[in-house]
Length: 286
Length: 286
Image (cartoon, rainbow over all chains, first blue to last red; front, side, top):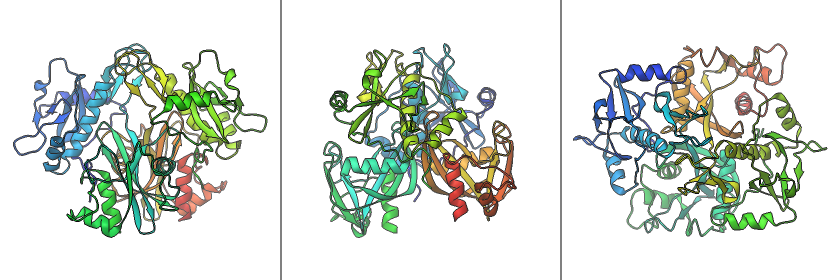
């Protein structure tokens, strides 16, 4: 199963050397299209795919970003410093119903527009910045610093002991929902070290081996989710109850039942677009 | 072989819930020590390990960050908005000569101090920010936004066809030096997608399969290096000459000779602290 938010039809452009030239040329292309968004949220067309408009539909004076090319047509999105988004269920219903790849395209646009909206000033000197590099950066007119969109790596992992894995529940989740533990990679850490630290902090378990499985982008706002398996020494837990209110060890049979939506299942799994679902499915299939 | 900049002796603190309390308590601990830096560069003690000072040696009024705990002693570093660093050979000679783990500890401190130095203003509203969360964030006094240190994920990979891998040379590198191709993960991409895009952009090769191998933090300024193998369809190259001035396909025997420092080798490999070295060594050992 392909992870959620991957498989975009977008051909990204190599903007390293001549972004301004490419931006101008694609802006003048009559085939150019503008992705419609509602704030940061997706807008569907009559067929349930992402909706597109003409470049002239962009708000007057709006900065534009060149997302890339689809079907020979340049694809832009308007930058909106006031754009705000949500994570309400309707967004996920819309994205799940769309053709494969549309959610991935939306994820790129959302993360990019959101980053611009939250980074309008130079972190180095405080002056208002302007979009540059075809909308893939912002530059400061005062100190010339170029700021690039951020992507925050997050590890998400299943501790494994014998034929069972550890799932946890956060207080804010729907009743019965359990998932893999997760946390941001900190500066100065490898993926393997972040996995070990997070599992010890959140569950008190000591990791002996880490194995990478799969990754996905997560556009709320802009994480790189790095899914791993981690062998641990024992099933004894010391939960950080401020993070994880309950931890359970579950078997492959139990994970398979939960993934199949068995009404008698001990727990409910995360939705298919979440990498935790992919990780559980890969482990269950082993 | 353990990747460079990993294996730090530092015990990181879980600062999620009570950072201010922990910061105050550790600041008052008579065992607390201050990491010495020269700008962003490392300072060695008489034994060649990282040098430490008393907290009272911090410049008057300097903000401090609590790095974590080593040997029961809290470890701090002073934040310096004027701190600048370099990547001269002397730094790497010093770090390579240090006990294992010291380079990793230094990497964390360098990335953190550097991030504070380059992010003194709120990217959301332009106002000067102050260190918060024990030095692991900055908060804006005007709009209350909390900014966290950034870690930029980078993919670095060996394209593989049959029993040969692709190495490239950048114009700025020492004569004869070849390494894995690499590039930043963009917003909206998975690791696997970034590997495929970068190999196509830089070398014109199409990827059919990506396998994660190993990772490391890289503190110049703050990357997460994600090392992968990628199977490709053919050895035909279309190099982006602005990035890669020469590409060569090399065999396992040739990589082993280069890693062993054979004077007759076709090429020289990156130094041991670079993840490309680890990646080459793992492949050569297969």
